[in-house]
Image (cartoon, rainbow, N blue to C red):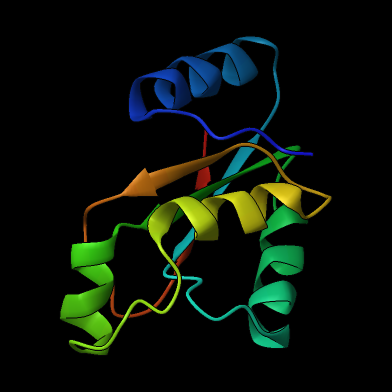
Length: 107
């Protein structure tokens, strides 16, 4: 199972992975109601680097993006669900709203 890290721990992890010579890919999204599109996106993102880190939009950010009835699942539940998937690690929260999840390589 993957890890759930604070932002500070995530920064430390990125530094450690880079120091070890690994390429770090980053994916971000709401991941409120997990579906096959999310899985495909995460598979693609994972293929972009040696390690995939996943950012999850926090609840206020999801509400701003998706509407007042969202999120259906809390940030903690969404992060736990993603951390349980195999193939990437770790997961962290993100306050910044994004209209679409973007994949970025961290070098």
